[in-house]
Image 1 (cartoon, rainbow, N blue to C red):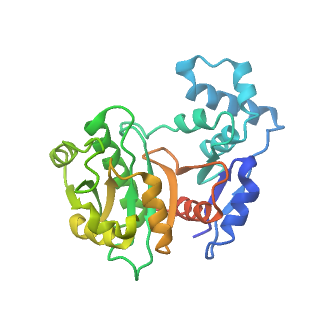
Image 2 (cartoon, one colour):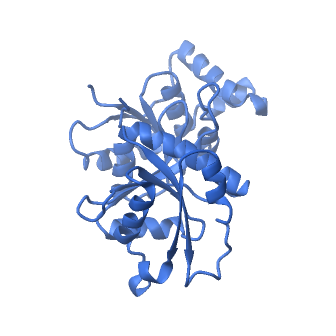
Amino acid sequence: MAPSRIAVAESLLAAAEAAAARLPAPRPRLFAPALPDDVRLRLRWQRLWQERRRAAGESAAESETALRDASVRALLAALDRQADAVLLHAADALAALAWRALEPPPGAPAPADFWIAALPAAAAAHRVIGWCDWPAQGGAAAAAASLRVAAAALERMQGRPARPVALDWFGGREDCAAHAAGLGEVLAARGAAASLRLYSPLLFPGGRLDAPALAAHLAHAAAGAAPVVCAPRLPREEFAAAVERAGGSWAGPLRAGAEIPAALAAPGAPSERLAATLGWLAVRPA
């Protein structure tokens, strides 16, 4: 199979190329779409963007302006089947609009943002773990929906089962709001899932999260599937840092359930995280 072709925001291309050099062969092929000179292509991209912005009533002039944004061009090139996946750059002015413009296939649930941790095989019983943030709105129902969409995406990417897991603590972190109440019940009502409540001091030796120890608990709870976790009282960056301390990688956010594989890079993202993100973007499900 030929390497994946990934459309990358021009503002990110140099960093992405340096990151891709860390990946094993065959590496994905990266390109940054330029502003089209061809009139027909330019009009086609304008129409594509207007279709995505139909709720906002985007005009032709506004669409023409949008084409000057590097992340918008990367998205449109991928939607125009010039690429297998797209990597946007959050530093671009319209990156947030381009991210929200990613739609699900017809009849599918709304996309969800998720991250992927991969621990070294020697450090964890189950090395791949998906992560979803607790949503800003919608509570347990919205969290459960995101976990289901992310689990389905990770399952396709790996070619092996993935299972949503609601993670909460007792001991040591009771001062935090218990947002996880009810998430396990909502998940269980919608299909195979797991709930896990752990004694937090045992997982934070010296005050820092032990990622391999947590991964072992998650693997057991997921019963052989890849766990996809929502942990309202564990900050995402704390988990990411623990994974990287253990020699693992951290990728994302990726857009689960979108019509094309997509990821969003933060401004100044470390090369290691960019490499991991590109590696997952390049995966072609069987």
